[in-house]
Amino acid sequence: MHRLRVKFAMPLLALLTVSAQAFTLPADSRQLVLGLADRWSSNNLTLQLFEQQVGRWVAVSDPIPARGGRDGLAWGRGLHPLTMPGAVKREGDRKTPCGVFAIGGAYGYAADRDVRRRANLPYHRIVAGDLWVEDARSPKYNQFIALGRPADSDWERRQQMRLGDPAHSLKLFIAHNAPPTVSAGAGSAIFFHLWRAGGEPPTAGCTAMTRDRLTQLIAWVDPAQKPLYVLLPKDVYAKVRAEWRLP
Image (cartoon, rainbow, N blue to C red; front, side, top):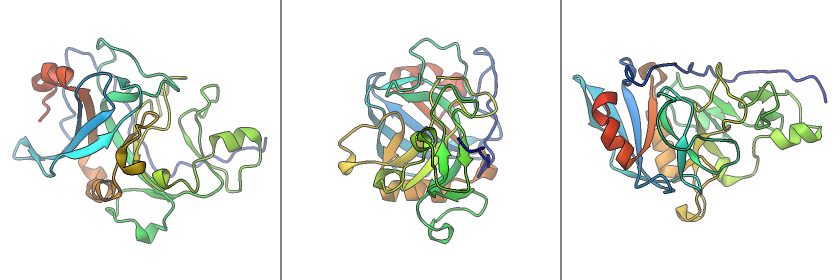
């Protein structure tokens, strides 16, 4: 295999280690995507966008239908405590990571000028030499790599970001199990992306929605406001809502 040239198209927010007793949403986060599922096994999700206004969360969108992983939800690795009861996300389990996550930059097939977004939201146009490493044995697991040339080894082709797939033509990174504290085998390549066949099929673990809704989300996200994605089953949301200072 050729020597890889590693390039990070955008800075990823560091994960925080917190105790269950002390956890609340970061005080400097002023944008929030709240996602709820009826139960742990659900792959139908409802999202809503919120902003901090005068010290409280205010809804700035109507409810957004979305699809999650085929086999429901499991706790991911994000900003929330890792001591909560319930299944834990693993590579290939087809579950959507739930918890509290930073939101990273956007990726897609379109030219930079054709993507509606804030100037401070990084965007990378996907080309043939772009990889997202899903091999848990690799030291670059769950990281973006720009080869600067087409993938030419079997390993590189297996890690290649999808080209020619409408569902992955536009996506926004969800910082589950993200650098600098990546845990091997804990799940990789988690994004907001476009859903398939009108939202009929579930995903392999990502959060999917219509093009209009994803375009709206990407245009709204402002990295200066430290945006978060909070995804929870409804019963867990009811238990932690006050303590975590959720809407």
